[in-house]
Length: 287
Image 1: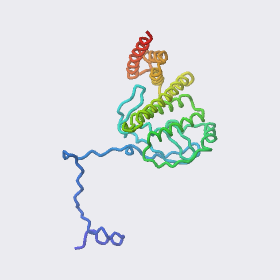
Image 2: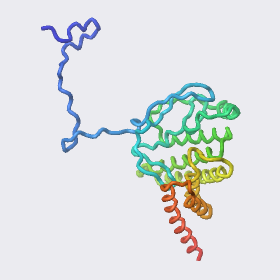
Image 3: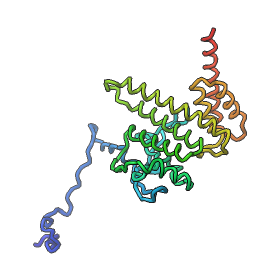
Image 4: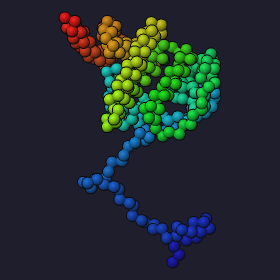
């Protein structure tokens, strides 16, 4: 009897005639207990190539972007740095045109005035070396380069203080993530960790300076954040650098503000307790 797939040779498929119609599916891999193994989730599983059109050179390009709702939030640091399971989303928040060198945080990428575009073309695009975007994932060092390029763009286009401060804040968070993911078996692990911490502090100081300036001259929302959130960020960062008067004033403002939600007030109370402890320790050390 002719096979079920006989005659396919007319399509050039001469090797398929003897395939088993109901071949048993391959058994799933199992662990030691006989249970199916959980699929291994990799960083690239959270990403896809999203198309963008550069507002500077008008070229279309693709950039690695995190799938909405794919990553699960695991918590946040005292200064609101978000931590996600199995991926650091901060690595993918800079959109960079590989042709002309324009780069910005995703929330600011599309928004440019004509004078800003001209400044970028003159100062950055004129000497920028086109890049090839072929990476499935970004390393922390590659992401850091993109953040620094975005900061350079922000300076050149004379962006608002809040935008420059926000880039500095997120760069500091990125460096914190890099330090956390360093291989402890590296021979220079301690040196690399110290370098990350020093760079993080440098970017945090500039973020603090920028947000303080923005608070005096700009209106809210600021970088998508309301006033209590910005004040909280300033207060936590100021406390880190022992600017206790600034931190105390802003925390008090949050606790008495009718615009601060209960969750933010709870966070502010925690910071107030930490602040009081630090002030007490500092006063004790002077005696």
